[in-house]
Image 1: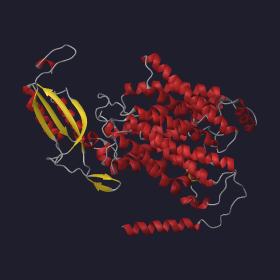
Image 2: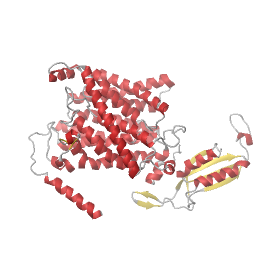
Image 3: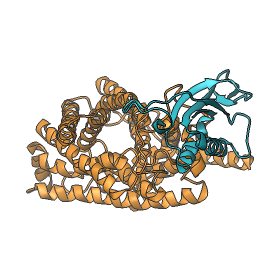
Image 4: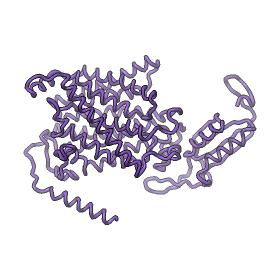
Length: 113
Length: 443
């Protein structure tokens, strides 16, 4: 079992979510986060171009069984990218998942995901 | 090119200025009481526009909140410029083109009314500004029907054209002293504060636009839950407050008629909300806040045309009837499958039609007696119903037909329906390069 954590641009959330659903990866957690990357996000504020300190991003947490890691990662990469890829398109972290428990049934491990 | 535009604008200004001479002040004095109430009303009606922005903004998904609120503010900006330039002259000038619209060159940039005091004893500036707020909020209402899927540039062009070619003509027919609906039947078609001019015209246009542009991506399969009902409720509250200016201000007086309009406005809003709440409790077992907000609006919309002629009992009935019919209309929408995103047609179109037609059965007897005296005989409820139905029918047919043409033109030139990629990213990012909600979770 792996935990896939993806940091993606907010405007790509729907694209990624839809692509994941198409790929049959339907169990995800989404949260709004801010942070730093290599990107200098330029936004307009009262007519001035400014580069804010903390850049808004969306974080996806997806727990998957090992055989689904590749499809999940590929799907996210394809859907989150702006065009051929821009600085700020985000990052994906994969960590080993020790245990997964479904609260309702107390199931453990692979079937609980 | 720039130079050409500048010089032609200067020429237009010069031509308009030429009419400014030879105009003299009338011998009417300002009534300070009336004027101060009308100034207050003008501000109250403007307050409804940010109220509407909050109402609509809270109902869309997080990625579209700025884009949706900008539809209301965009109307404030565009019509705010257009109304003193053209709108007032087109709406309240003397009839031209066989009564299709009005036109008065001296109203261009309001230059001819600098000293004018109207027979209602208020400066004409107050009247022009008061009416201008109605012209602002009307196109902003339409935006609820095609929320979350229009191009901002196309939207701006559409509301500017719509204001000139749909709002001004209908406003002229219904409210100008020489408008044909104003003079229909014994005492004209009854539209106290904008049942036809504001609510039916915008509601029908909303329906036509929703059908023309098609549904949002994913509708109705995907849930599109409101981003912030707290903001929606705040907006509904502001609309209720502002509506006192909208209706009670439309008496263009500060007297008994004003008090009547204010009372029935309050009663219809409460009755609409109460009815909607009870219907929901019976139907679902839970009263939702959005239901209460919708009931408030349904009641307010229905009383808008009627505020000058119905007594409180009639107001109570109109609010209740409108709430039930709008509730059913919104249920039907889901069955029919068209995507009137925020129910601009379901509440404003349907509520406006219900108010404009059903008010006939609740008119106070003194009004009917006056009407009978004016035609020198009898004037029945059904005769007035015929007048009301004509006004409603004309408004629906005209608004639907002209709006369809305007939608087609804007879609083919500037583009109104947003690109799929932009729609998925959300209006805030794709249209404005901003984001509305800081760390509120996306939905």
